[in-house]
Image (cartoon, rainbow, N blue to C red; front, side):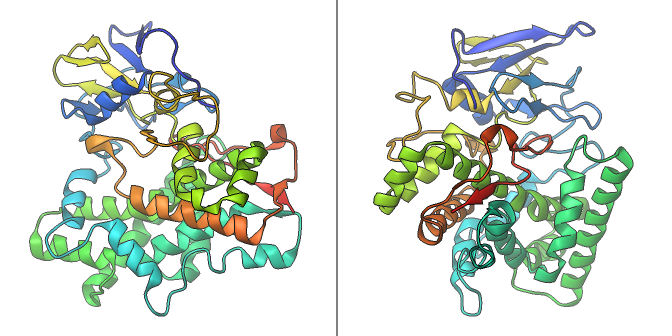
Length: 396
C-alpha cells in the first residue's frame, strides 16, 4: 500500500552518472503543486517510463537523464509519438460537443444499450464459485463503455485487449512483441479513422475526425495518438482501479459489511478506495521545471526533475485523518488519484461512474463475496504506469 510521507514533503537524489537533480514529491501540497504547475513539463529519455514500486509511494525508478521538451506536459508522450493532451482536450470540449463524462453518462442509458454492469457479472454468477472477478466484472464495465463511446465493434475487444496487454507490459513480453502490439493498435486506430471519414458517425471518434478534418485543430498524428490513448488507457486504468478497489474492500471486511448495510455510501466509498490504494501511485513521468518554482517549501531549479508520489500524497496525515485506515464514509476526500489541475484525468467523472456501477453491482449480485486465495498469492501486472491485478480469484 502507499505509505504516508514522513519528514520533508520533498526529498532529492542525484544519479551517479549525472549532475541532474530529481526531487521525490511526497506531501499532498507539493504533489498537487507539481500536477497543477504549468511551469513544468513531462520528461522522458528514450522509451523508458518512470515506474512506481507496487508497495510504496516513494519507491520510484526513474530514467537517468530526464529531458525537458521531450513531451508536452499535459499528456504522456513517448518519443516519436504524438502529443495528445492539449489539442485533443480542446477537441472534446469544443462548443456544441459535451465533455466526455457527460456524453458517457447519456451513452450508457440511451435506448438499445444496457446500463454498464447490467449483465457483465451474469456469466460469473451462473458459472458458480470460485471465479475470477477481473474478466467477470472489472474488465467488462469500462471496456464496453469505451468501445461504445468510440464506436468500436464489441467483437473486436478480445484482440484489442490482447494487443493492449502486450503493448503496456514491461517484462512479460519481448521488446519485439511489445513493438508489434503497439503497431497493430496504431494500424487498427488508423483503420477506424479511415472508416469514420468514409462513413461519418456521431460517436467520439467521429467527432475527433471531424475536428481534424473540418476544424483543423488536430494534426493527423495527434488524432491517431489521442484515439490510441482513449482506446487503451480509456479502459485499462479503470480496470485496475476497479480490481484494486474491490480487493481493498475484500481485505477490509468491516468496511465491506458497512457498505452492505448502507449502500448509499457507495459514492463516498468510490472516492476512498482510490485514495487508499491508487492504481497510479506516482505521476508516471518525472516533470522537469521550466523555471525555478517552489513546491512544498522546496525550490526546484529550472532543469531539475520532480516525481509526484500520488500514493504518498494520498496518505498525508496533515490532510487526511487516520490516512492508514479505510473509511468508506470519509468526507472531504481531496485525494489525487485522478490527478490535479492541468494534469487531471479527462475521464475522471466517467471512471467514478464506472467504479460506482462495479461496487453497487458487487454488493447486489455477490453479497457474500470473499477472496478465494491468500493475499500473498495474488499476482500483479508489470504495467509501467498503472498498477493492477492479473487476476482476482473470489468465491461466495
